[in-house]
Image (cartoon, rainbow, N blue to C red; front, side, top):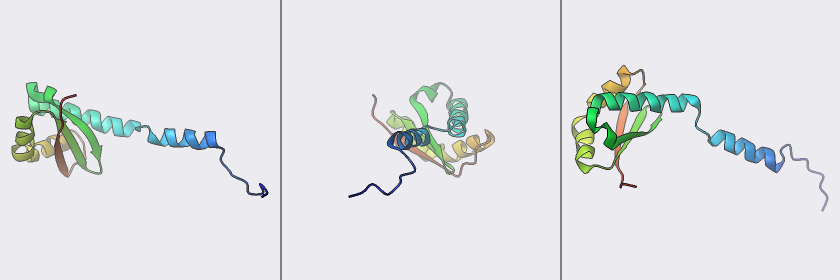
Length: 103
């Protein structure tokens, strides 16, 4: 078996590219930061129980460890949150809330 085929990437370059592509881009971090700030303004003192997990393709995902806050956000505050995120400059069409256990 001969080694006539030429591989344009060596293994190290391929790993560097994968690691670079896996890092959150500044725009993604900026969107999460804007969403988290808007969420804190909307929730006030209860904001410590909820965090913005992601902002992707017009969907903000919020995680909370409180079942009461989960139900409030999912059931009663969803439209207010969408308006709040839009006022912060985010193009949001939906909010999803996840109940996560405490770490």
